[in-house]
Amino acid sequence: MTKNMSRFFKPLYVMIVFISLFFVVRDVKAGLAHFCNEYNPCPEHLCMPDMKVVCTAEELCLCIKLI
Image (cartoon, rainbow, N blue to C red; front, side, top):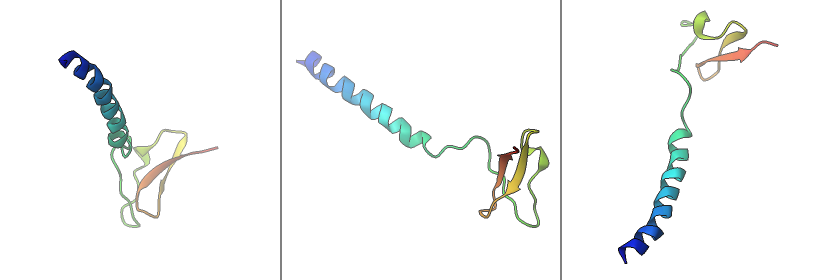
């Protein structure tokens, strides 16, 4: 009886863990957030050489690729 129950619940547990990973990983950003405004500009060393640092309306520093 316990073998049948474990066979039934094991795929259910795997599905719950797999689906919960998407909720955990959904709001992750790479790196720390740098805040900026007119008095505190974005640091130039924040981006790769072929990218430009910009300050957004939300006062966050973002890197954009130059074309």
